[in-house]
Image (cartoon, rainbow, N blue to C red; front, top):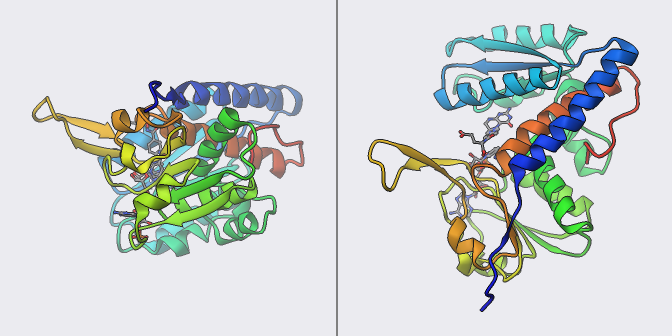
Length: 302
Ligand SMILES: NC(=O)C1=CN([C@@H]2O[C@H](COP(=O)(O)OP(=O)(O)OC[C@H]3O[C@@H](n4cnc5c(N)ncnc54)[C@H](OP(=O)(O)O)[C@@H]3O)[C@@H](O)[C@H]2O)C=CC1
Ligand SMILES: Nc1nc(=O)c2c([nH]1)NC[C@@H]1CN(c3ccc(C(=O)N[C@@H](CCC(=O)O)C(=O)O)cc3)C=[N+]21
């Protein structure tokens, strides 16, 4: 039995250092070139959780010195209206990054909408061109959540080469791009999902375990190899156990249990979430630098 508990990987603190780097680059772009990066965020409908998230993106965007453009459209917006807005943002030279908040209302085809974004402005990295570029190891826009996870892993481990990585979840926005990035850093990658057999045993083989499932506290100590690094992507709001009527944010990992076995672990909140937003700002800066033919910031891309 290990008598130590895991190192906490502090995503909140790391995100603050990423934002500080972004802010310094933005200040230089302004001073030397008179350019201010701009991020447009499009929200369709009134999902309260999405509204909170969009608001915090807007605040952090202006805090690092970028322009933030928020477009809030009613839930019954037609596909043609949304595509017309995206076309306008594609042509707008003051907009370097475009993010369409997902999920979209059911009457809108999210693949069609995402693929209408200019791939060079696709700061989420969800456009099929960026997915293809990432999959073939070419320069692309890298999805923010997996990029944030990769940054924390590189910071903690140095090299990831040869490590066994297990990604639980195969979504287009987290699981699959995460697996591509880990493969790019020479991990041996396994992707597990709802049909995987003996998923606990697969996970117990992981030096790096990424949980991106959306099931509150599904993964506990018994799934984890002693000393492994655990990255918890899950954001689940559950009824508060002690305070009736209140809610609580938990990950896909049972934190206390997992921390008794893992070597390092990210908390929820304060882990992957803040890094996601910091990487969105980093991607916007990268997109702006590329658009103007200027050198890209070091250490902020994959
Ligand atoms: N921190 C952040 O910045 C972000 C956090 N999130 C959070 O991450 C989590 C995952 O998000 P996302 O990828 O969009 O979710 P999806 O619902 O799109 O994908 C979930 C994946 O988990 C798999 N899965 C579901 N149940 C099980 C199970 N019992 N055992 C094994 N695998 C299972 C699914 O498998 P199958 O394909 O077979 O159905 C699917 O591949 C959510 O909690 C979300 O809120 C998401 C984005 C950003
Ligand atoms: N086009 C698009 N791109 C996204 O990247 C995207 C999206 N749509 N839709 C929703 C998911 C979810 N997501 C989160 C980002 C940050 C936190 C975050 O900062 N969480 C804080 C806590 C926030 C709170 O207290 O509610 C934390 O974990 O510490 C959470 C969730 C990005 N997503």
